[in-house]
Image 1 (tube, protein in one colour):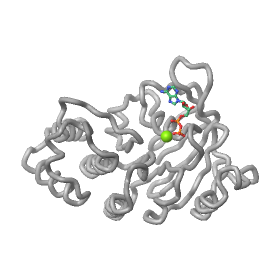
Image 2 (cartoon, rainbow, N blue to C red):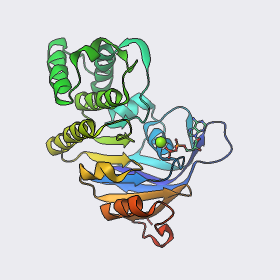
Image 3 (cartoon, rainbow, N blue to C red):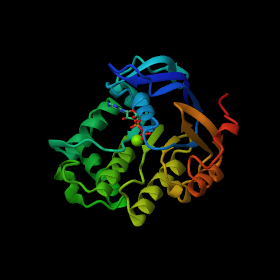
Length: 254
Ligand SMILES: Nc1ncnc2c1ncn2[C@@H]1O[C@H](COP(=O)(O)OP(=O)(O)O)[C@@H](O)[C@H]1O
Ligand SMILES: [Mg+2]
């Protein structure tokens, strides 16, 4: 589904690359975890895949369903079925949550949104993520708690029905009960849509207790230095990123 080939990217206008010669391949239905110390470029990767305007790809390619998406803007990538659950979801004052969702849904599906079914779907989804209905009428993410912001991202996901999902630090700001609810929603979504692929970015393996994963990758020195299974994530929790010998790693992509 997603293939990142020798990607080098940086913040626009900066000299130094944040990622360099980074490669990763994610097939249909696979769940991958990307771990790495703070500031190694995990969120940069997520934003580069989504096509964030602040990040520039200087080398390499990102293929989605075998086609390069580098020339597509954010909404075109979303229309292809790519979804990013952001580490710090954007606040938009003056745009209500429901207005935002309806516009996003119209943009992504390219169809006129039927108000009646939209409201029904939204109410059902809100109950499933245990968000209060009043959140719909508030400005997008304005004054939302960390947990409410993340649940709201999952609400968007449920309505937009993406094929490829990136979860950037989903577990930050979520208490144990909220994390359980959110992960249940993700698991139900995968069960209903088994070809969906996930890229989970995290620095704590806690989320792996709730979601079954296929591969765990360690990002360090601008690229993936080691690939393993969930055992690797728990090793890192115990030993730290410096304790695990990542240089002897077998990278599945090389
Ligand atoms: N928009 C930006 N402007 C300036 N520096 C940035 C920007 N985005 C990322 N960086 C820098 O790039 C590095 C990687 O950041 P990031 O991708 O957020 O790391 P991670 O998500 O792994 O913690 C950091 O040193 C960060 O300061
Ligand atoms: Mg980050």
